[in-house]
Amino acid sequence: MKPTTIEDVVAAIPEWRGQAVEVQPMTGGLTNRAYCVRVDDRDYFVSIPGARSELLAIPREKEIANARSAADTGISPGVSHYLLETGVLVGEFLHGRSLAIDAMHAPGMPERLAAAVRVLHSARPFANDFDLFRLTDSYYELIASRGLAPPDGFDGHRRRLREMEAAIRAHPQPARPCSNDLVPENLIDDGERLWIVDFGYSGNNDPCSELGNACCEADYDSAEAEKLCAAYFGAAEPRLVARMQLYAIMSDVTWSLWSVLQQHISELDVDFRAYGGRRWKRALGLLNGPDLERWIREA
Image 1 (cartoon, rainbow, N blue to C red):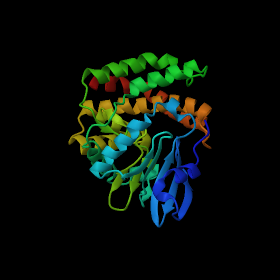
Image 2: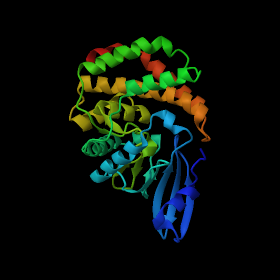
Image 3: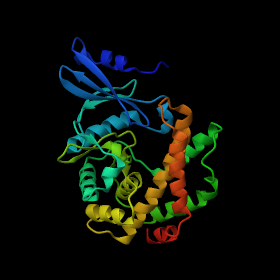
Image 4: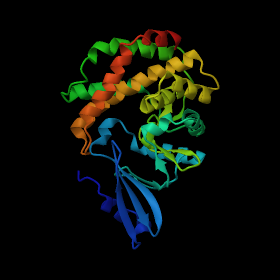
């Protein structure tokens, strides 16, 4: 199947035909190709699915429904167009600063992030559910079916992952509409508030999973994780912090497997071997660390 180009997208939107169109590629994404498209002085954000990204378990039709639900809360930009056959999403362009990891450690950032997440979690239920443990299983099976190797030592830690899952399942939290991909680049600061963008991996999920993922992506230490927990839940209860920490580990585990797949299917100029290697090394440090037993017990 011929890859979708930005020219294909421009030609496919009737409202843009005959208009003055300027296209500017954007960098930083790990799955999709992104562009800023100016049409008669109005800017749009265009996201084109990456090559064979259907293997990454991204439900494109549900992504658009979830993006619209998030936009209704005011925490995410509106959706302007959606091309069903190609999965291309066109949204309002946010003029703000895409965050980097250093910004996540600024004073007051855990509280700002918690406020933004609480708004997102107030959205009407998303069109699908999301579960890091099941996604990990799916990626593992896909890797095996394609004759690829998981990260070094992965198989030896699968029993530990099941123990973590059992602890998580013992006292489930009510699901909320979650991004499940709170990398700093998916947070836009317009100078007044944070916006959340990119709903490719979105779905109803345990809020502790969302917060744990945020801690993982921001590389939060224990004090910052407790601040985020307290700002979201009202108190940094040990059981909630423990759940967040277990989910933070699972974020690195899942996306390290994801990186193995991306290394073989993606056409983006990204060193997925190094990216996944860093995530797996961090996960191993926690899986073999002194706090894991306590987190399992407290969760």
